[in-house]
Image: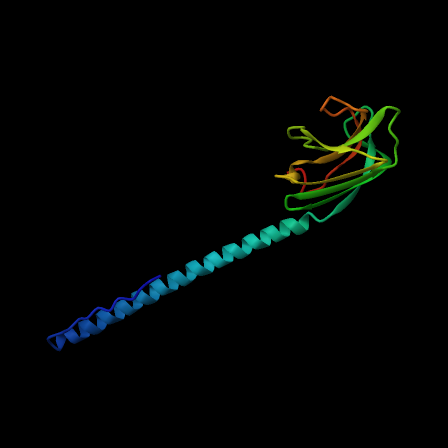
Amino acid sequence: MITPVLIEYTCDSQDNINSEHLLKRHLYAALQFYSMISKKIALFGISTAFLFLLTVGFHSSYAAPITLDLHKAKNPGPGFGSEKVGTVTIDSTGNKVTISSTVTAQPKQDKVFEGWLVDAGGSNYKLSLGQYEKGHLQFSENMVNPYTYSQFIFTEEPQNDKDPNAADTYAGTDLPPPFGQ
């Protein structure tokens, strides 16, 4: 905050009266200038905060719930064919992710289906979302960056599987933006 300072100046002669008047005008102009600068700084701060809030709001609304068809994996892969075997719904608001998936396919005897998020094209890391129960998978977590993942897949795993790695992809889908960042 700028504090105005009162400067007392006295003149002894008529010639100095014009100088005194000129000095007061310069002081007044300087105070006006500093006042204008502080208002501009405050306006810049408010504008920056507003743009930040718009960006956060846009990001949250941009990741509205999506429902995608799951297609059987191409054999040989990579990619997915045209045979639909289920759906997946992903609701991501900020860091909170809720995934619900239903499949019509049945795993072979002594096998189970397991859902995964995949960072395809990046680290290729696969995050297990758990086992399907009677054709349905439900997953809900707070994640640091859910938008890293670019695919949702499910695999056919041995029942009571001890191996933490994913088996070959049974089916899946590519995730649209903002996923895959």
